[in-house]
Amino acid sequence: MKKHKPKVLQIVHVYGFPAQNTLKIIKLCKKYKVKVIEDSSESLGAEIDNKKVGSFGDVSIFSIRSEKMIGVGEGGVICTNNLSYFNMIKLIASRHAPFRKKNDPYWKKYYVSGEGYNYLMPHLLGAVARAQIENFKSIILTKKKTIGRYYHNTFKDNEEYCILQKTSKKFKSAFWLNAIYFKKINKLKVRKLGAFLNKNKIEVRSGFWPLSEMKSFKSIKTFNKSVSNDLFEKILVLPSNINLKKKDILYFKKMIDIFFKTQ
Image 1 (cartoon, rainbow, N blue to C red):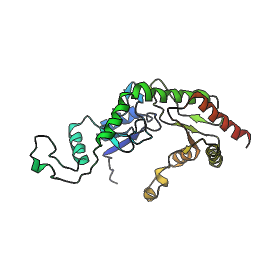
Image 2 (image 1 turned 45 degrees about the vertical axis):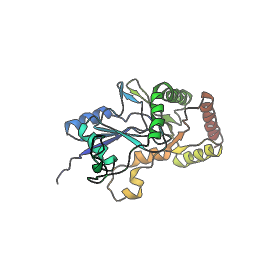
Image 3 (image 1 turned 90 degrees about the vertical axis):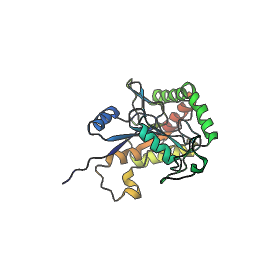
Image 4 (image 1 turned 180 degrees about the vertical axis):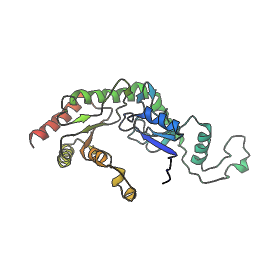
């Protein structure tokens, strides 16, 4: 049977945390000449060995949708150190119109040389993004990390019923969202808890749906799905807005404790 080597592998950094074994994956991909795309949309500001996520792969992508670490409404950013990739991305994102330089003849300006899209960012949104970038480390990232510490300090003694993503000196999280995994509780009880919190005006969301459960991927062969299904069914993502205070996180814990005491 002929073996097919993948051409591209995508690493996804989730909830503000660097992906597990990122360095090992990058090393393996370099060995076998597999290109790497880093999806860093949720983890802008996170680090591995003091190096920012998004700087390990051949191409990195960042979302700038309104609820991300930096948000301007909708859109995204692509980063690369490869000049040929950069030129091709720039061309495709600007309608595949190559003659856009100031000194190009005016009659060439609207020539389209291939399939392209109008993905250029409006100037106004660019200004909004730039203002956030200039204050990202000192304000946004600092507040996100503070809220993350509040969550970890508040829930650290509750491993009997929940676990948070681990932090370490090697992996520095940006704490985009704070997800709690209810390891020893069945999915029905987790859903009841989620409904209870929503009813009490604490907005929560579930873990990510596994791709194997999506209609478009149903026909694709999959292997052991127990881990992805378990994470989807037993994760609750709690509020993570940068304006939250320590008292808010304590209130969330109090409401969770009340739920379990009444069950």
